[in-house]
Amino acid sequence: ILIIICLYLLFSPFYFFPSGMPQVADFIIALGSIIFVFDNRARKTITLPIFKYVFRLLILIILINFIYWFIIYVFQGTANRMIFVPLYYLFNILFMAMFAYTQITKQSNKNINIIALFVVFSLSIQFVLALLGLHGGAKDIESRLTLYFNNPNQLGYFTLSMLTVFFVLPNKY
Image (cartoon, rainbow, N blue to C red):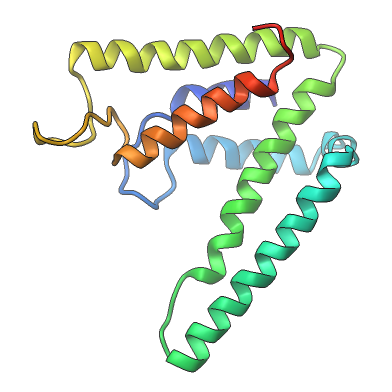
């Protein structure tokens, strides 16, 4: 699981496909999620108290999105993809569970160091690519530099996610 998380942190800044489509890092996490769910490790993790609230939130998200989808689809006759939105939340919850698992194992101190190293390594790669002017995002000079992300919002989300990882890690860094 630790290897999956580290590979995700390394590949998540690289968007090779259009926005909204799964990226290379998403496939890595999907594979890790399958392994995680079918292993006994998931049971140990989801018994953590925080996941009681996370699953309540997920149920609320599913309910709200289903109602919204139903209203739009039935009353307006418009086909929409709102029914799939809860899958994005489930995907992120699975990542959260895998990350939490690395923090509750016997090797949690080692895992914390490795994850922190990969966060710094990933950010360093992005920094070097930015300095070299190598980016796959916005092509025109007037746009904000987005590196390999498709738009500035994705870059912002990635940056906030990396900061969150450091806030979640114990006060070692």
